[in-house]
Amino acid sequence: PKTGKNSGLVYAENALIATTEAGGRALILDLPPGKPFKWDAFDALKEGFDVRGFIESGFKEFEEKLTKPKIQLADWRSSKAYTGKAPEREWLVNHTFPMGSVSVIAAMGGAGKGMLGLDLALKVACDYEPDLLNPYPMAFGNGVVQHGTAVVLSAEDDRDEIFRRLESLDPAGERRKKDRLIVVPMPDIGGPMPLVVSGKKNPEATPHYYELKRQLLGLPDLKLVIIDPLGCFVMADTTKDQVAGAFTLGLFASLAKETGAAVLVMHHLSKLPVSEKKTITVDTVRSLIKGVTAIVDGSRLSYALWPLDKDNARGVCKAMSVPWERNKVVGGAVVKTNAPVDMEIKTFIRNENGLLISVNEILRNVKTPESELRNQLFEDIKKAAEKGRPFTATSDQSPYNRKEELSIELRHLGRQKLAKLTNDLLDSARIFKTKAPGSSVSKWLDVLNGPFQMGCGKFEAGFDIE
Image 1: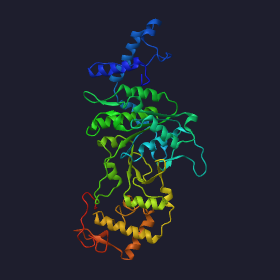
Image 2: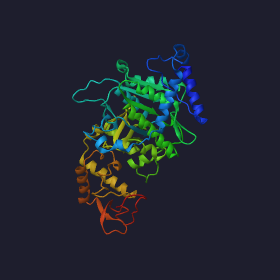
Image 3: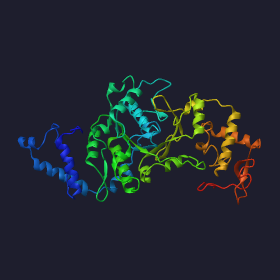
C-alpha cells in the first residue's frame, strides 16, 4: 500500500478504530520476540503457537495498566525519588530548546518556520567540525549541541519541495554520510495523519500515534522530532476546547519523555494588530498563538516569530548593508518557558535561501554615533507617550526593561548605556519627567508639549502604571 504498511496492519488499525467507536475493546499486539515482520496468524497456527494464551496475556497486561492507580504517592517521597545529585538540564539548542520536552514554535504563514525547522534537523543529523570561533552549528541564534537522528513530519510540503530545500541548505550532501535525517512528506503518502481525534467523551490518541511512537522508540540515538504543523495532525478542536489542547500537548510531552528527544510542534500565529496605538511586545505575541491557552501552557517552552515593523526592518537592513524587502526581517523570542533560557529578542534576516539567520551579534558590533542614538531614544520616548505607554527613567517601565519596544538600534544596548542616554536627554531638557493625572510624583517621560507634559495624557488600557 502507499503507506508502506502491510495490508494486515492497515486492516487491524481500521478494526481497532471501528471497535473502539462502537464501545468495544480492541488491541493491536506487538509481534512475539524473534518473529519476522510478516509473521501472522497463519504462521502461528502452522507452528502450533499458543495464540489464545498470547491474546489473553495481552489483554491481561492492558487491564492491569487500566486498574493500576496512576499515582502511587509512596513512590514519590523525597527520600526515595529525589536523592543524590539532580540531573543537569540537557539542551537541543543551547538555552533555547530543552531535550525530553515538548516546545511550540509559532509564526504566521510564510514567516519561515518550516525552513528553520528543516535547517535545525539537518544540523542535528549531520556531524560538524568545530573550530575556536564556531564550536557549534547555530540555530535560533544559539548553538546546536545535540547530534543524532532527526525526524520531521511535514504536512504542508511535498517531497519535491523538501528536496529543493535540502539541496539549498546542504548542497554538499552531508546529510547522506550518517543518514540520520528522516523527513516524511505527508502529501506524498496520502495526506494528513491524525494523531489525536475527538472521541465519544474525550480526545483520544489514534493507532497512527501508537505506531509512530513504536517506530520512534526503535530509532537509534533519536534527538529531535518535528511535527509541522500541529493542526494537520490533530482532528480535535484545539481552538476552543481546553481539554483537547491539554490532552494533545500532554501526549506530545509524554512522547518526548519516553523517547528522550526534543519534540518541536510548529503552530500558527494570528495576524498582528494593525492599530498604531498597539505596541507589539513579547506578551502581545504570546497572546496571538492560535488556539486555547492549553497549547502554550502545555508546552515546556513556546517560541514565536513575527515580522518587524517597516521602520525597524529598514534600520536592520541599513545596518547590515542589504536592500530592504517585505518580510525580510523577523523578530523572534521565547514567549513562555518553565526553565531558565535565553530570553533575548532575536533579530533574524532572511538569506538568499529563505533561511532566517540571527544577526544580533552583528548588530551589537555596529558602531552608531552617540548623537544618533540619543535622537532615536528621543523619538521612541515621544512615540511611547503619544501611545499612552510612557517610559520612566528607572524601574520596570524604563527603556532598558522595555527594550522590545525600542527601535532596533537601541535594543542591543546595556542598562548603563541606555540610562546615560536618558539622563543626557533630561539634562539637555529635550525630555521631562511628568506627572500622571491625579498623581503628585513626576516620573513619566515626555517631550516638550507632549500629552503628559501638557497634563492631558491618557494611559493605554491595560498599561501597568504602578
